[in-house]
Image (cartoon, rainbow, N blue to C red; front, side, top):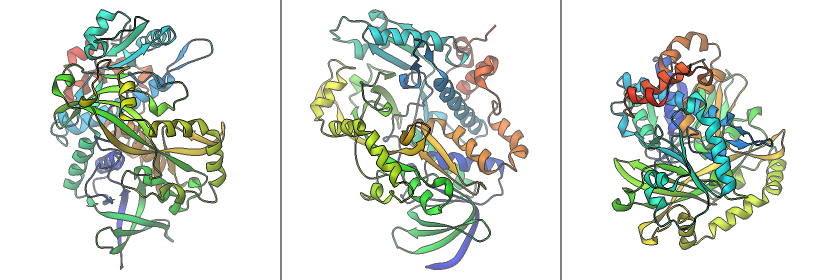
Length: 505
């Protein structure tokens, strides 16, 4: 073991989109701070951020039906959709700043324009979609959304899905052209290349085995080279744990009281992928349907155009799988070793409350390829098995905690857990994750650097013009940001964006 203590201002654990984003923000705010990144894989973005381990939707609530809920009085609650869309607009602004500052050379290396659609069948769901459309299209964040229940129009929008569709029942879709496909793996690698050029030290093939509070309030890390086994000591004033599913174990090792009583439940995802150019060319959209009754929110079926390394393919899924690993490249003991005395009752309560989820996962794991193809044919009626292959996507770890809803509540989404003094923070949870990375990392900065936030505000507003403002309450700002970020990111001309997002009067 190397007993020499190596000190740095900031340590980022995990080389995914979250650490890449936080590191990039901090380097703009405090260029002189020393930053070290520790990643146990050989390159950046190999876990949940990897382009093959997520759907790259660029979650903006344009198509995800689970972000809008029908209330008992029949009205549609779009508050969550507004929140997620605002957060994605913040990401677009920061990416645009990086492009305008020549820190990102070509935005098309990670983001492409792809329409976002919602698709439903049956009278009840068509009624829901129409009411959802009426509520959303009246809001400045969702201007440009179209609705149709006309089969001829739907055949123009989604020819692959409408071909040979036999059912004559009610059918409808919404469409918004300003949706995107985001290659978060490519973006992660671009940001780490940028950080390397800014003299950020990146240690690949290194793993944090332990985190301990030092006498002066900073943090001592025991870091091991996964190839040689050599161990070294690192110390930092601030530590961010952004290791995806691996964050829970490291949070527990920190011993901070805020990390007590929290558990995690791992769920893996699988997608059917088509790379046949003739089929891929017939569909250009991300189309989300409704989850089946009893299925969890992360199981919403969708057929997505993906752009990876300038090649288009189609993803359909997700199908759920189960592994006790917390990371795709994790250990089979991850789940059992995450159970501690302080979260045991919470974990047991979650097991009792989520028997239906367990049953659902078992059924999903046992599906044959042909059964998965039958699910795909709900979207693509003439889909042929030989054109589609099954790939295993990344692991997601859903948060389990005691809430007002009761003990052992399974949480869907992301959550920042930080020490009271702001010296350490961890990001737990899953979707919409990557799409809202900038907003989530701004939350980390606000919670962990309250003394500096006022001095940083001018720079934050330079990077994110809407910083501190509500987009939902400022239609003119929405129009300006849509237009400027679309132009900078190469998604559409400013004039076209202004046409889609008119000013309110």
